[in-house]
Amino acid sequence: MEYLKIKVLSDIKRREIFYEIRIHANERNMRETIFKENFLLPAFFDKLTKVIESQALDWHWEEKTVEWANDNHFMFTTLLYARLSKQKSNWLPIFEPILYFLAEEVKFKEVLKMKMNLYVNHTVQHVHAEHVDMRHGEDTQHGKKDTPLQGVITAVYNFTDCDGFTKIEDKKYPSKANSIIIFDGTKLHCGATPTNTKKRVVLNINVMKV
Image 1 (cartoon, rainbow, N blue to C red):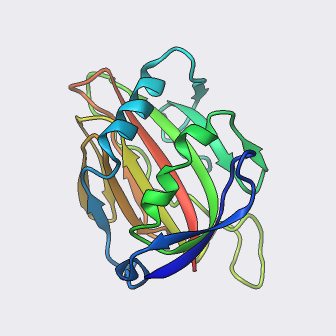
Image 2 (image 1 turned 90 degrees about the vertical axis):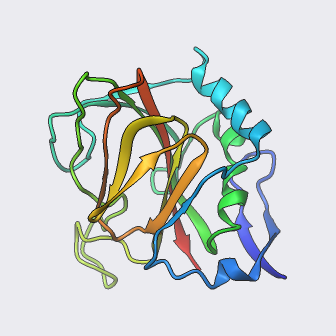
């Protein structure tokens, strides 16, 4: 067995811990997309679902689904954590254990962002603009402004069974509750709204690989 050093985000556990992962996780080639069903333990998934379905969670209206392009679509979001802006939600400790399940699949050293998106049913399906989640904010020695940030792993965790989907380059992945899609963060991707449920909820996670 090998050990992965992860920075834990919560106030209660603000320290570096060693988390045991399987050797195969270190050998993942992120040129290949991982789609995994039954990702979380059922009890943990049920707990998170109850939080999402409650009236307590804060959802904020966003007038577009992509920060740098207006696709004429809207969504609701909850930002759990953002390293760059140093934002951290009070809900983070509840969702944070997902990171340990993610560490079973890929090796990473830092969490960049965790954000939940809620897409409503528009009666017709809307496919959002293609994008990457993490980009260079300015020209640096590591890359030009607005180009994809290298070394990022993006994960889309699905809370909802519906006919919405996530498209990565030319391939569509279904929205199946308790499934996750893990892929190279430099790949263009987009989401689609549901037509057979009232809403679709996903959690976007971006981490920096080792």
